Length: 89
Image (cartoon, rainbow, N blue to C red; front, top):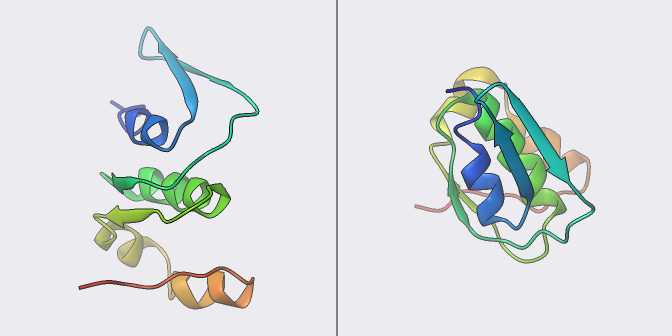
């Protein structure tokens, strides 16, 4: 189910349609807005981070342990690019 995370992108306001479980169509541009979302795997986590950075407002991503395993010090790298990111308890 490689497109399982598209529902999380839709929570941010994305217009994503999955056809036959094999193709995803993204219609845009669409204004994204912050929302709580969950990363089910590393691919989903990366997509949600990028969408969250593009969204207005605050995006909270749970399941970031997938990102921790796949990316070395991602938060510092994003901060170096000017992103406002952090962890909450």
